[in-house]
Structures are given as C-alpha cells and as structure tokens.
Image (cartoon, rainbow, N blue to C red):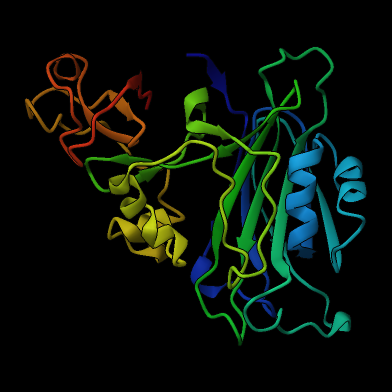
Length: 295
C-alpha cells in the first residue's frame, strides 16, 4: 500500500443557499500555490470522455479535451497554505436560469484545482483535483452538493476519491492524507450515460458485493454519503473536517478508532481489535485490507 499526501481540498460553504442565480461559495485549501478554474454548464459526455482519455494537469489541457464545451469560466489564484472562500456565479447577461429537465446534457458546475509547480514532484504526487458539483434550479431542486471528486497524479493516473464512514456516523474524505486503495482508478473504457437524470454516475472499476451496493444505493439516487448515514446536509459540508476526534472502538469501546477497513471503508476499530476480527463489525462484510486513520 502506498500513502499519498493530498495537498488539495475543495468543499461547499452554505450549500442550502446555493443556486444558479445566487451562485455557490467554494472553500479551497491548498498546501501549494494553485489555480482554481470553475466551468459552468460543462457537457457531461465530453467531460467523461476527457477523463478517460487525457490528464487535466492544467486548465488548458482540460479545456482542449472537452473542446471548450462549457458556458462560462471563472479563474482564481490560490496562495500556498491558505484557506480561501470564493463565490462563483453565472453572469446575468448569459440569461441562464436552469440546465433543463432530466436527463441532462450538462453538469451545472465543474471545479478544477491545479498545482502550479509540478516539475520536481514524485510520480505519485497529486497535482490536480476535479470536482463535479450539482447546483439546484427550478427543474432539479436537490440541494447543492459535490457529486464526484477525481484526483490526478504526476504520472497521469486518475483516481476517484471516496468517503470513509466513521462509527460516529460522520463521513470523512481524506483532506491531508489519503490511501491509494481509496482512490479508485477511473476505467478508461467507460462512457457517460445520458440516461442518468442529472449525470450522477461513478466511474468504478472495483466490483462490490450486494451489501456494498446497498450501502451506496442512496448515493446513486441523488443522496450523498452524509445523507445516507443520517447526517443533515446543511451542516455536513461545513463540519466535514471540524471536530472529528477519534471515537471509541466499537469492539473494546475503550481505545480510539485508528483503523479503516477495505473495501467497505468503515473506520470503527482500534489497532488491537482489528487483528481479532475477520468481518467488519458495522456491516459484517469480510475485509481484505486495512490502513491507519490519521486525524
């Protein structure tokens, strides 16, 4: 297993008030100097075709890959080590108030964060983060949320970033450090499907058991991981990385949780108890690998 440090983080602020007319507030944290490019109305088919055929190490490569198939672009410069909040919005002159009924042809918003200095980085280093964001409008009133996150390494490999599920019912997405097994490689042979109501699809290459499929069913139906675990979507965006202290192991109920099980992604065991069980105490699925959760 290879540990990879993730220097890029993007989240939504005040998701409940976000919309096509009012815009979206994005919080971005970068350990390196970066650029944030936001694309409104990016075509779904062209985007997924670009993900499977090229890298997105900078905005020029990405825009050429999707053949400029977006309605509007905004760009922000991000200073090293800063946490910044930027409002992204569509100008009124474009007269865009919605992105049509389902099935849709365009994603409302795509955010691309790219590192500026990548020359001397290791081949496994993460250099770009691409987030696909749903923004509510008159036809699709689901709350604003990040549908998918993709990471690009210096070597050109693309991974799909997934959440971890803690025994405290909080969903955790690796901000400072992520494990390579949790970044699922994108299958280059897959194509986007217009049958998906709002383009909510996942590029998966690892098969899931029926139990795991059931766990992720809520995500496929338009709910994010926080809602699937019973967390209020209004609060989860702002509290995703705040106050997440290690809780008690679900087995011994004394030691802090330090281990994450794969492939179910439940963080529920301590270093001692993880060697005493063969099945996840949360979902009863057999786990094959594990890694240390650093908080």
